[in-house]
Image (cartoon, rainbow, N blue to C red; front, side, top):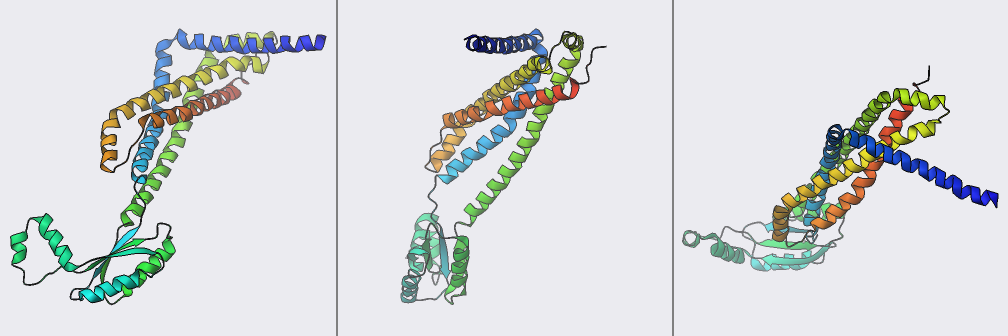
Length: 313
């Protein structure tokens, strides 16, 4: 029974020590509000920069990704090929692996569309012959891989009827490659800035340790353990990380509000929809634990390095 009654008392004392350390850390931060606010602003801006870039990149990718990913290509035939031959070629290409559908746009149909939408009807009447070629619009299998696709394009280019090939998905692949490269760059910048946050918090804790040097020496003289001395500094680092991440999220939310109008307009043009609230919640869920971990890591490194050097004389 004594052991059972002693365990809750020990746990209560342990929690009380942590509560006192946390409250003292908050009081120390509020003792010099100007310096604390400046440090938090630096941390918040440093965390908000990569988070903002990643959020905007993810927003743009969500708009582009809402489009149906149906690869297609246009096959322009050589001039002078009869309509019957173009129609036969269209039926032949539909039998190829990886081709879902082939639509023939004859030179006459192309000229008619150009006449309607270009506004050069009178000028086109002066032409002796139609200069536009037949075009075969190939809709490909949505799951076709890069290897079979390149083989198919090579076969189409080698056909005697082919004038040129226009692969419509090429720009999408280039955009995806650019997006991936940008993401890698932003992640690298984010890692560098995360290290900067750790250094900022670590340097702040180092100054706090030096300011409380005499107090630490007295604590060691009366038998204070390293854990007891280290605890308030860790809570200070945690507080810097937490409030810095919270400030970074507020800055990111402000940015999303500012760009919400243009982004929603862009989504409308693509027939898509984006939720700013989702990205704000996502950023909140990611930033807070990251900020807390960086604060604790920076404080731990500073305390481990500088606390051992302080010994009572």
